[in-house]
Image (cartoon, rainbow, N blue to C red; front, top):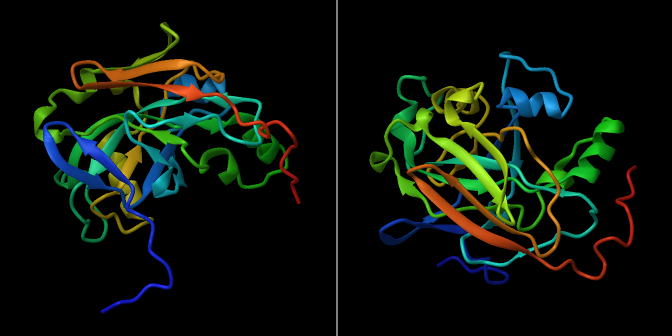
Length: 244
């Protein structure tokens, strides 16, 4: 029997609509610059070349109803609402676009929270910006809806409201790379596994969130969820990250 030096952390999990079982998270992949208008607002070139990927730790997920603390070391926390694709099967090597749908368990909506000031500093110095994206509680997410209960995904509207005001919205058909294309491209780089979550990119309208802000996010006719950014800790503005 395997013995651990100390008890391992509980698995990060996401609830499923109409199912008492939980979806255990393996990895979180994120797609950057997947809506043209958002790419332009971030000053990036819009291209159909290769998709941009980055990752968050699995335990960055915040299931519905859990507290979302304002993160440390930032003065500029931004929201990015996104379609989330949940995989229920392992991939057998590189996945073809035609077979990519067979891996999908379900869909949800999530926020890719971003410490925008840390990201800007890293970009300016041509350094990795993991600290801007992969921090604790940076991936709030809804319950998951099984894929067989979702039809005409591309016709659905993705949206986010903050304190009752609409901040972001777009049709999912506006994505530069569709779900099947993203799964194909990811499978060329990583061994995709059951439990993987893919945050599919955000539309234009990203902006700052303040402690105390309440949000509501959804995909029309599929799922929605809400939450609140908790008050900042006393030390979150004390200093900047010391870049090497």
